[in-house]
Image (cartoon, rainbow, N blue to C red; front, side, top):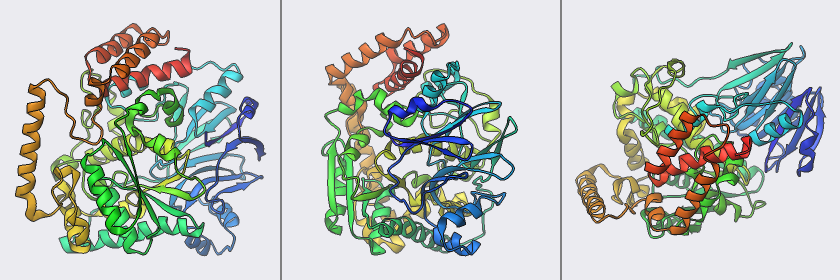
Length: 558
């Protein structure tokens, strides 16, 4: 398992049984087990500096501080109050400052999950919740079950704030850093995305802005592969996001790509992605998810994703990634949440800029939980609430799994690209308006392949009538299947369809539920809610339940 843990005034030697290394950094103990794929980007200075991940603007930063060697440039950057604001990439780390304070941070979008425990002069910070729990138990420190985390999982399928299933352990949220000093803890927000600082631009000017920023973001991450002589491993599906990463990278000359896709056998994602890879002459691999074997890996996945989101979210991605040569590739290039960066979660300007509210983007609406408005008060409007919660804390939770094999990237999450998109008014971005116009203006050939979201119709405005017809036909087919008593099968991950036809999976779900529903950490009310959702819910909702049960088993003895 890849990751690191840093602690002070606690014994973390229990971790020495693993494959990692235990050493002292300043006054702190550091345990790390890392591939360090981008070894010239990572930092480990024994007097108190540590950085994990990769930095795509390393050269610019060294020039800015006028230092020729990265390790010393990084050390100098940590002296700035705004640090790590200027860094770009996927990273986390810490520094021990001259005043004795310890500063821990993750990047602007939280692509590196970072968790912490603190009690006066004692603290633990780690990328792995499992390791924090081990150290706490080894030091005979009691921890308690966080019922709020369970309620988030049973409704949204991910956390809405810094909660974990362990009450005493919190997450360092995106764009934040935590500082331990003189037995006190301070949480600082060094960066926040905003969509309120829009510029008055024409549609064509906005399209040009997007293209310039996107090409720079793509070049940054693919050039990092080249710097270390890695081949490019690039997700490809029937959607637009991964397509545009692949296409623009190819257009920029990064043609040593290996594309891969996984979905239901014969579905649109396979048909579209294989056609694109074939025409671009890229190496291509496909994994069918129909064996449904990935549905059994509850505890393996939860150890990797820290229980931050439902375990079934990555489907067969973990197994697929484990088959690739880890020495051949440096990072997995994704199109993570691209459609809601160039476009928008909301359908119009009024909805996007409205006061944030709960109830959107939930995996399940069966349990009517009420959550604190303090969560909503931290966000300026609905779009930023959705981006931070559904995007960064939800969809991106699979990064923690993927990072055990490769570093992970998405040009859509490049900070400068996000800022560019959020400067464009929602009225231009909503409903994929400017997204489709950008593709059709600058990359017309990329629009010659069907779009899964449009039922396989090419993403061209003049084909809107054809799209509407395809939607109507798909809807009729689904209604017919329901009337015949069959589950819907026409999507990339039809979990309800597979589950309904798989007696072995049904028996496994039932057994796992029965074995763990009586966990002592559950209140009677929560146990009743869990039982209700499992008995009445869809297969997808059942995986929310199994996630809660799995976390109870792993950390509270079942």
